[in-house]
Image (tube, rainbow, N blue to C red; front, top):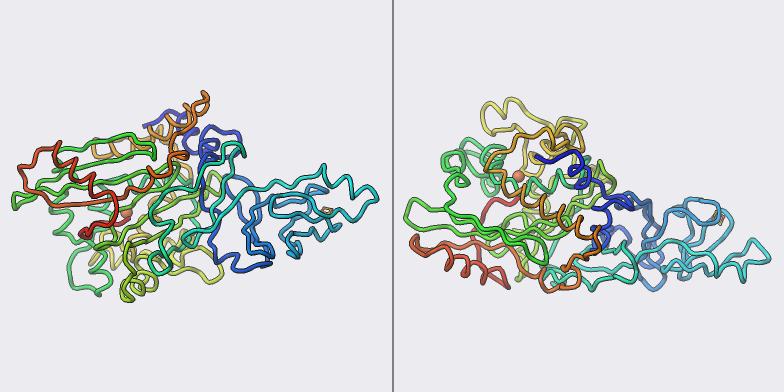
Length: 437
Ligand code: FES
Ligand SMILES: [Fe+2]
């Protein structure tokens, strides 16, 4: 449990808040590349960390993220004309380039000189892995691009979809660090199910029967420049041990399990404001995806739930109780809600509301990983308040490690097993399927 003050610090990311400042030291997703698909495309509204912005591409295809409102008299630039390397406000014609410089101020005789005194708030952006990345922090601290391995992978080895979640970013994020929920929330009762569910869903026997999180024989938590590395070992009935490594990356990225052999996932929850966020659900591989994998994930409706056309909202959402089916719940699945991601969504969008008050909680030992992530973030936010910059953004290579899992003989000592699994967090490794949030 946290105090009220800690809970506020963790969950508030607007300008000037401690966590908001920490977020403003990292490159974060602003929108999908496909939302601003071409040079001189129409602008789109983007709300990020409580700031109202618009994104567009100029005539050279350079992505831009600027204030949603014109500095002249506050007109919405969403209705602007995107023309000849700049966005022009349609109220009185002022025009700005991607850096926010006013390049034309045509409604006044002093326009030629006064325009140098006018600036539109703008943030630097770049394109990578289907996402437009933006940095909202102080210009003199702009970090290099993050060093995630997947950022430089070619097309065909990544895919991403974005979802609008109606809850605080941290509420959505911490579900990925809640090891005991999968054995309940995501459980199904038998194997007589369509193959897409069989592929994705653990069963009564495999999860509730085992409850591997109760059998873990050691867990180590290491604070790293990128965030936190957690290593756990679980003894198996055949005398082996399963050793796994999972990661938390500042400020809001999780590795979210391994989605299949050689397929990794990353979940990114990006605050829109304090009661809503976007989730970028990302899959990547060091090898090109098979067509079956890609089609199943993207269109099977389980890994990437269907969306209401023209929105980022899942068809199964809070307004329709996620289409919970009470007959299904009695006879087949623990929840009666169809897919893993929607099962998670149904629970996290309303934990005492969209921004949970964690002072009300009663945590138990199996909640330790999420407590660790909270502490890690709070510590970094407090250190930044005291003038200590987070090291991660300026050590981008540290972000290149990823989730891993391996089976080892049961008598391999902890120190040795930890060393072995750490080796596997670098570069390609074939890994068995585990729960991917
Ligand atoms: S409000 Fe934009 S030019 Fe006047
Ligand atoms: Fe989950």
